[in-house]
Image: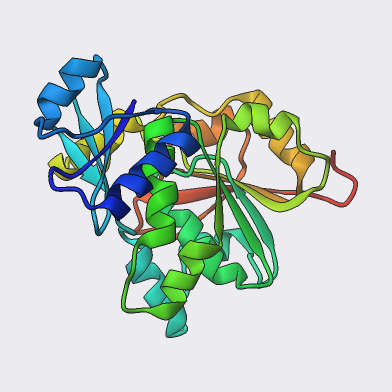
Length: 263
């Protein structure tokens, strides 16, 4: 993967791009007045992160592009601020001060809602296995600005980690986090949005494994939660018997509560 800048780059933009490339362990490619297509072909890379003054943009070899945005988390956080309930928070039984491990961060929409709900006394760690997505979202969470201060604060509190959740869970001590959360990429998307096609191309499509659930149960103090489409066979396959969420919603949450003596 390459990291570069917009065509007309300031010194500040170049420094940001160089720093991001170093953090991600990627090659920094000076733009040198080349089109992105020519730059990609020159370095024989299929993915590029483009640093601009306002944001980071992901561009694919076929021309598809994607920028970070908080998506529905913005609406959900505003609802929580005014005192409305959130189905995910209700399903978990989350409280201020809790700690959450989001094993499948993606665009971090759920992580943002978690971060607002647990507050400054809690913590949210979000894992992302795919390097382009990790770079895009990590940078976005630290720089994206909304007109809602609580939303901005929640995004800044999230700790992004580039890691496969199976490997990360294996290294976690028992009972080291309150909630472990999985939101795998749906096999059948609920909406066919062309704007989200690059996101689906970037995402890890692997199913959650039995081992991951076993490791999550060992790491969690309160619950392991799986987000899936309502009626998904994944709940049964992974032995989630408590299914939460509104009866009219297309989304449901499977919950495994952790008893005090569970391992």
